[in-house]
Amino acid sequence: MPPPDILVTAALPPFLYDPLKADYRCHDYYVATDKPAFLAAQGGHIRGLVQGGHTPTTPALLAALPKLEIISVFGVGYDGVPVDYCRQRGIKVTNTPDVLTDDVADVALALILMTGRGFVRLDRFVRAGGWLERGPELTTKLGGQKVGILGLGRIGKAIAQRVEALGMAVAYTGRTRQDVPYRFVPDLTALAAESDFLVVASPGGAATRNLVNADVLAALGKKGIVVNIARGSIIDEPALVAALQAGTIKGAGLDVFADEPRVPAALLTMDNVVLLPHVGSATHETRQAMGDLCKANLDAWFRTGKVLTLVPELA
Ligand code: NAP
Figure 1 (tube, rainbow, N blue to C red):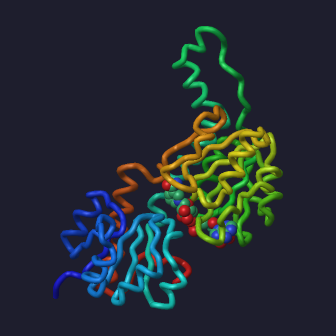
Figure 2 (cartoon, rainbow, N blue to C red):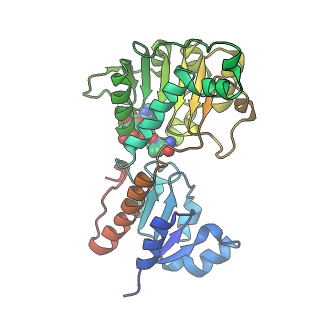
Figure 3 (cartoon, rainbow, N blue to C red):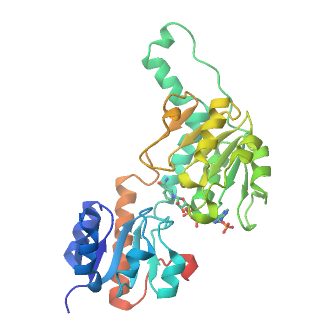
């Protein structure tokens, strides 16, 4: 039997792509200049698709792949995948949960420390020679402050553990109350109103688009800092920029943006904002583990007809 044909719709790191190419016939869709011609020639053979965490995959693309059996996402977020369409077609969708949880939670903790204690600003202060002229600013003690988490899933819980270790108080919101030692606040605006840090850790996609809107930011108020390690789409980015410009919130720590890698120009000059280039899972160890799991899902499917990490909507 020839190896299954796999459509690759995003650039993959060598530690994933090399083993994939060893076991499958891979087709580099993402570099094809004439995509319709590419699909006309190859689409009929394709049985698997590999994509990045937020690579958009349209129903129109999937319609050109009549034999597609599985989409294996290199990432835990699969907001780029039309899951309802896949359910109708019987296409399996897998992702890479758990293996990246700690690294992403570390980034949230770092953003809380960097924004709350002003560490990035203070680093700039030292480098610019400011310390030679005056003493550093005083910031606010983190212990005792309140962290509100939107989306207390795997990553949200790992963030909760970390901030608890700092002596911070945790509350959360989501669609359901969970059996956890943290207070559930059903309404996001109410959670923002009582939080010093509003940490966004829910999935992206249509259901959460602009959930953190101008009203939520107004409720967070001058005492509050927004931290987003989930998806840029969850925050109304123009409303966030406006709130920061008007000084109606205290600051923001952002690992993700609405139109990556483009970051709103206004944010680049703000001293109370810390910006990271979507590095939640960006360690050698975690990316390797994600790559291994991404391929293991394909291997399991084509060898046994089962997958390791089916997304919950299809379970
Ligand atoms: P998870 O375990 O599925 O947790 C998601 C949480 O969000 C759940 O607690 C869920 O609770 C809540 N949620 C889901 N839909 C919601 C909605 N419509 N409104 C409010 N809350 C909702 O996922 P995870 O592994 O923690 O990952 C979370 C997200 O982090 C991923 O989807 C991904 O986009 C992002 N991420 C970012 C990076 C990065 O590099 N920055 C890396 C990895 C992941 P309920 O079901 O009770 O609502």
